[in-house]
Length: 187
Image 1 (cartoon, rainbow, N blue to C red):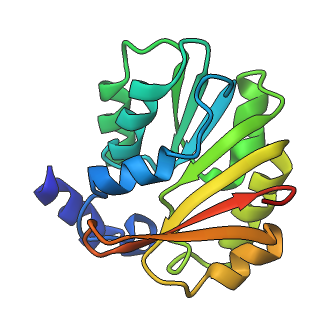
Image 2: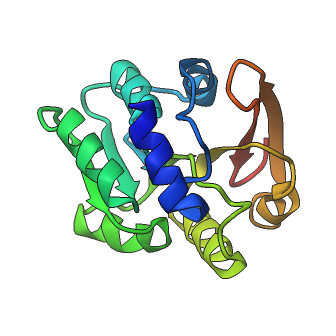
């Protein structure tokens, strides 16, 4: 799987963003603040090889809808295959910029959590702005946006949409990653 991931990185570095998939350590830290018992809808941007997806599926309640949005065709096909038998899990081949359209398609009014593996440092600024603005608009009042980055470079950009950010570092990832937990209405 790592060779396929590397291939995707070398062919689409701006949207893949890393040479290796995220670690299970990072996945566990990314989801630790999710109230799985009460979450009605969780959206994941850029599931890639499904490291976070598997952790979400393992922990979620049966009623929780999981909406996965993957831009890369290869990763979309892989994740779709992984979750084909899972109830309330939907995989979309498209851009996170269009999250509102996808929620309408599945009759979802608000999202409790958005997890993101998107490389904001390498995305065009108008794309990043659109994704962050649309993410804020689809989150429920107490919703959280949880993303990771390899640097703090885009922290201030994210702060313009989510003023309250808690930052943690996961050293057991290659490379080590910063996890930003952003609340729509304060921490």
